[in-house]
Image 1 (cartoon, helix red, strand yellow):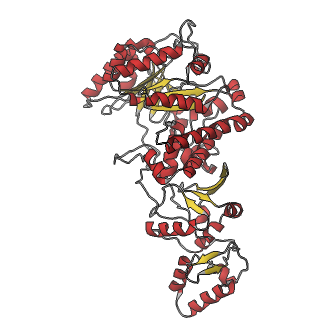
Image 2 (cartoon, helix red, strand yellow; image 1 turned 120 degrees about the vertical axis):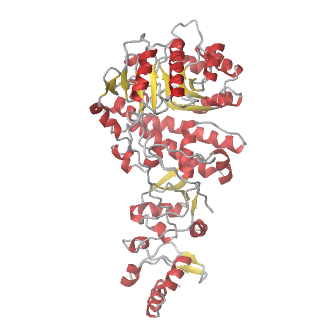
Length: 569
């Protein structure tokens, strides 16, 4: 069936009042012929596809500046139709590899941004609105990258799930982190506290911390708090006093169980401290950069007669032996521009998880962690673009290979940055923000200063003596990615969520501008996650990457869309 015959068939069908039948033939045979093209009898064709009715090749009419799906209104696509369509499309070189399909309200294709990228030889496309990810044949990739409308012409319709975010209008306080002290027993090379704060000795008064929590939380709200420093366990008696005050107040408000968190180097954990943390429902982030050599180089004791690695490991073992639920511990490794060795760090930390010394692990560059930031000039020299592309890109791909190998061997690798993005990409979970700082999340400094972020520097918005200054707080309230420069046009905006606004303040002195270095890391993580998905079967992915709503728990997170699990055919 040649192009002229298709046109004649359409016109003959119109004369006989068989428009619906012709539309059925067009859809089922993948004859995506635009009415405007036919009426103008525009010449031109592209890759032929198999007509299931005529059982031979037909030429596609693709030279129309509009595509078929923008000519008429779009209806909902059912799961059955989408599954059938994907089976047909796979024959022509596009294979959807994540789980975003379903019966959804579609939008015109000209409003859908499709991102084409080469990921270590695997050609891929990513629908930036629906988060649908697909492998694509090389010949189609080359053509479609220049003219995305060709996707319709071979029968591929992006998922077109326009993200809808739950209203997040209430500025009520949800968590306050108490910076107990800026003092620390280590001299970490990348520590921002040591660089930014002259006062390294003041410890917050428990009554001051309690007053801040009482004043900031509504009278009927459960108080949620965590502890940061410095090293908060250097002043354990202060932490203990605040915990008891908060628990008493929460019980008065009708809440029997209170959870706490602490970020610590774990060098000051005795049996007594371990029992306290266990009995008072603490979760923990423990800083551990890697093996003994790696850790001691970056996180030495101020008193050089001590070995910080051995004391941190000793603290973890005390916790385990005390019956602390180790799955509540995340080990966090921080790297700078030297000695990255991602695979070595991941392998080491995952071995500790397997031994029951932690539940999760994270390996991330300085300044993307909540406790690490070099002096800005030194940071930018360490993470210059040429070096990142030459060295760090290779490190992350080796880590992705390690991750895939672990899964294929039946193991469960832990790598927080990859785990989180895999979950969002595979299940199509949109994120409108990564930062609740100044809106529902706050910090309180040892001197009583109220900050929008627990990292403090440059985020002062008030003081416990006079409360929150709404003028200072105003720029923090609009925390969605739409308020960020560059983010609305970024193809992975709904995966990233806009990034950390504190990074923006520290690195570019503008809360609304994401630093290029941070964007590079986020895009690299996304591409490696796409590659990982391209290497695994659906079963392997779903055995490892769990949907956040799998157990039926409702999650009302600001800036997130709550959605059911959606499966492909």
